[in-house]
Each structure stands twice: as C-alpha cells, then as structure tokens.
Image (cartoon, rainbow, N blue to C red; front, side, top):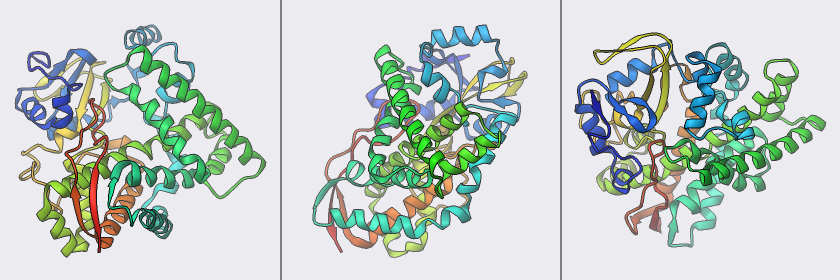
Length: 410
C-alpha cells in the first residue's frame, strides 16, 4: 500500500496550490489507489479509476448508507463537524450529499430551470448585464479580473434565477465562500465558527425572502420551490438546503474557472490569438478551461458493497476521493494533457462530475463563460498579465485569488 504521507502529498501547501499537477502525476504513477491518512480516504487519480467509482451506482455520497447513527456522530466529532446546528441542517445535508430516491426527488424539483433550452433563454439577459459591466470598466486600464469582473456575473445571474434582488447578490458571495471553506482539509474551530455563523445569516435571509414570496409569488425558482414544498415534494429543511446549494454552487466554482481560464489564455498566447481569429472555437475553449483547471478538483464517494478498483478489493464503507483535477490531466485519456488547446475535440472531461451527481448548473456555467470571454476578446485588442497570480490553497478548490490584468480597448 502506498500512502500519501510517504509521497509527501501536501494539498495545503503553497507549492501544491501553485501547481498540483506534479503531485497528481505522482499519484497516477502509483500502483492501485493511494491512502490519504488525513481524510481516511483512498485517492483515485487516474481517469479510468475516477470513472469506475463515479459511474458505479453502488457508490454514494452520504455516510448514512454505510454507517450507524453512532458511527456517524463519532466521525462528525472526529472531523469537527459537530455542534453546528444550522450548518448540519442546511449544508451537511443537501441535494449534493443525498442519494437514491431523495436525491432524485429533490433534483427533479429544480432541474427544469437548468436544461439547455431554459438556460439558453437567458443569453440576452446575461449579455446585457455583461456589457454594462464591461462598460463600467472600459476606461480603467488595469483591473483585478476576479474581483472587478468575474465575481459579479455568476452569482448575479443565479440570484436572478432564484429570485434574489440584485443589490443582495454581493452578500451571497460572502456567505457562500465562508460556508464552503469548511469543506476543505483545514477544519479549525475558527473556520467552523465562521461557517456556522454565515450559514445562520444565510438561513435568516432566505427565510425573510421566502416570506415575501409566500405573500406575493414571482416568476422565479424560489416561488416554484415553495409550490413544491406545499405539494409535499420537499420539506422545509430541504427547501432551505436546496436554495443555499443552488446559490453557493452558482458562485465560487464559476468565478474560479473564469480566473483560471483567463490565466490559461494568458499563459498560452498563441491559443488566445487562435481564439480571436476563430470565435467559433469558444465552446470548445470553454470546455478546455474546465478540463485544464478543474475548479472543483476533489469529491468523495462511499462504497455500499465490497468493490474492486484498480485491481484491489475494498470493503463496504470504504471512502474514496475522486480527483477530477488529476483525471483531467491523465495522458492515458488526453493527448498532451498539460497543453491548453482551445480546439480540443472529444474533450470528455470530468470537471462536472459523473453519474447521478453530474453538475446541474453546467449549462449555465458554460454560457456565462462563453459570453464573458467572447465579449472580452471582442472589446479588448490586448490583454496582459500584470503579476503571476497566487492560487487558493486546498484540495477541494482550484482558482486564483486575484488576477491583475492590463487591457487595451479595441
């Protein structure tokens, strides 16, 4: 058995944040899977192994399928997940961390607004909003692409879908980031308090917004979810949990991949020029951005039965870590995986997950990116990197903290 400690695998380090791909390559080169003591988890880094785990219907996200209530309580205490009443109700349980009939029931209530047809109807609205945002920045020659531009689009659009007033959307990003940060390896008491406090504030806000929609329904997802709750398709906790998940999912990962996507274009200027010369490549370019720097590079599954992965048999209850970021750079699956190629075809990456938990918002995320990058390249003839960005630390996220650029209007 190869362990992560023997390999000096340290996903909280600055070196890993700047370039995790050397570590991922080392993991892929090991026989079988690699045991990571910090999470008591077996890491899958090869595309084939990730595929085998995520497409196996016997694999689940929730521990309740493989452990007793006492064991779950003990694991929560060991991982510092306990004594978080609102985080436990609305974040630790969610559509993302449910399985089977519960997952299917909840997903069905919101899926209808995230189909390609429904998302496509938002194109003009998103384009208008993005144009106004670019107008407000056009005279500024240097900006932080993350804070000044990227952070304003995904949450604003998902907020409109759900029914959040425009002026409240910036606060949603703060709550979302402070809640999500507790899912990574560092779960200190300070980070725990931050996550619980922000979950409570988020809940109180949504409770007030729900009361307004009960009094006066609107043409938005929140009103549809109220109808679903009244029809018995979800309970009150599931209502708030699903609303939080949709808003949180609509923020961080898309902001991160917008930043890493532009950074990739700046690191590969020939590919940026190729995209300028042929705007029809934008759809494949966006997919390549997700493959090249997967914004959510790590998720987990539990086995509900004994299972064989990579030639090794694992018992029921084994926890597997699927490293999407590593799988998407696997040379056994992708030709020249470390090369950013805006025209890459047959780009069947894993950045949106696989199986039952395939990302609900993938069409919306790709549309946001298509519009933002198409507008950027059309309106600015030159885009330059001011300083090399520092990337976020952790195993569960991938994206630059900031991205200072200098641009010249066309």
